Length: 248
Image (cartoon, rainbow, N blue to C red; front, side, top):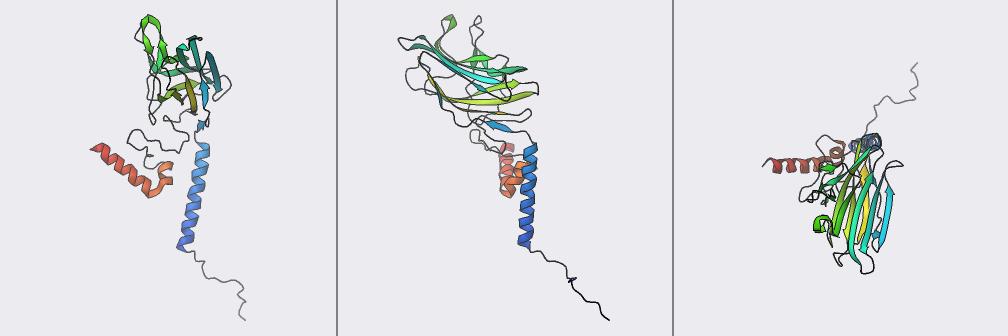
């Protein structure tokens, strides 16, 4: 008596298109899980806060309570609208610093905050362990006029770092100065971002997976990285072309 064959012994066949769908879903799942465990970049969103008039200031919290950035504008001669100064400050519970240089006046010890371009690596800048610095001023100590690296109409990035006990964290703030009288130094804070400890960040970068160009060079993930895996063959090809141009 032959047994009843209620189940087919024929092996299941999975089409190539279905294999591709499975592989794509698996890669996307792995990529998402890896990113959730990795360090992150925290972006403020658009702020467009104006700093002008006789006196205005605002503070914005960073990673933990006690970590913050502060921007301030003031006028020496409020009635005439002359003698404007613009400052930037950063506070970290275990340390902080600004990308900038000391002014040439040896007795002033005033830091001029660097004016960065979009795409520059924040951590590669020279930092000074100070909690505040000057963006621009119509006049200053030692009879130096128009001090600072920002001027009327400038759009640039400020680089800062802070430490709350977990290691240095780097960030940027984007500011735009008004096009009126240079002596006013009115400005806007457009937005800012900072990274977790160990996470690199470029000026203008708002997420870990974002590619931010520096000049004419595209920021392409290293070969073998999750970012390159997500970009696929096109990303690796762009990376190899970039490497070949650099080698020349």
